[in-house]
Amino acid sequence: MSIPPRYLRARTRWPPTPYACAPQHFPTHYQWHQRSPITTTSSTPPGASPSSPRVIFSGIQPTGIPHLGNYLGALRQWVKLQDEAGPREELIYSIVDLHALTLPQDPVVLREWRRQAFAILLAVGLRAERAVLFFQSAVPAHAELMWILSTVSSMGYLSRMTQWKSKLQLPETSTLEDSGARAKLRLGLFSYPVLQAADILVHSATHVPVGEDQRQHLEFAREVANSFNHVYGPVLTSPDTLVSPAKRIMSLKSPDQKMSKSHTDPNSRILLTDAPDTIHKKIKVALTDSQPGITYEPAKRPGVSNLLEILSEFDESCSLSPAELAREHENSSLRALKEHVAEKVAEHLAPIRERYAELMMDGRGKEYLENVAEEGAQKAAKNAERTMRRVKDAVGF
View 1: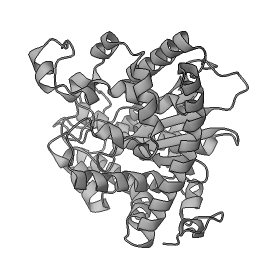
View 2: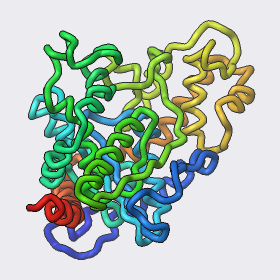
View 3: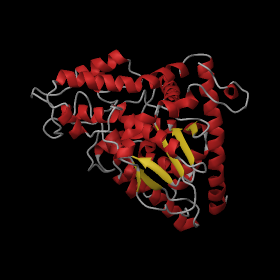
View 4: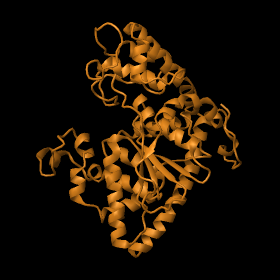
């Protein structure tokens, strides 16, 4: 692997190879976005003028290698936003490792997951010269702003959030008075949305790409920003939502549930680093049904429909919807469909897997990652400090 010179302690501009060439490798991978553009919930976010350049922030937890659902729901969208961003727009993407501590972690495993997550960001096509890439824990302003925001955050609002209930496998109707909550809940998990709000607000983000399951957290971030501004004046930017049109990719073994790392069967998910033979094996044993032919009926045939959803995202030779693909393959066998889906997924993931392997190599690959992360943290800290100066002045520090 050719490591850019500036990341070997020299600070010169770089044309990283193959990473700077990512746009050339990926353009056809994003045909689905041409069919379904990313949309925003309003024309101008509060705190920004119509002529202000966008500041886009998002983060991903280091919880192991991402799967297809993570990729389609977040990472591929991040690359699209990067490649379409104007020259004055800022893109800030973080490995939110402080959030990982809300559940018990093995320090050795977490350290490796952090490195893997950072390598994946670069492998999928994010470029350090265009986007700020950093570890959340390397920028203390995130935790500092969280504490200040906690003084204006509503306990009642936090108690109604679904995140802590789902993490503890409690019913959505659970309250702080329930015995299950009292026994299991810790402050870090309960206040998770406050840190998430700080992540966004400390960088004065104007737009945040989110999936359906994260909308509640962005609403909370806006609520906290408005509460702070009500008390101290117009200091924090209330962010807008960028809604991804990506379909939810379901588990290969339980197609009524979304694809997840928490599923006990590793064959339920395809990881971005899976080898072609592994991808073929997992899709071959994917749960479908015994009906003849191929149809797109999510309610009646969830397994087959899930395969068609995956194919519609990864078949770069066409721009067909799952229903259109079903008609095209209506006389195919399930075995043939699975083989075709596996082939297209493996073909798409091949360059990602290869770049990831190069980045994870000991020696120059490791040094490259460390230096990209260090430079990203410096840029992120500089951004955050501008916000913190205004916040501290407002509260009287």
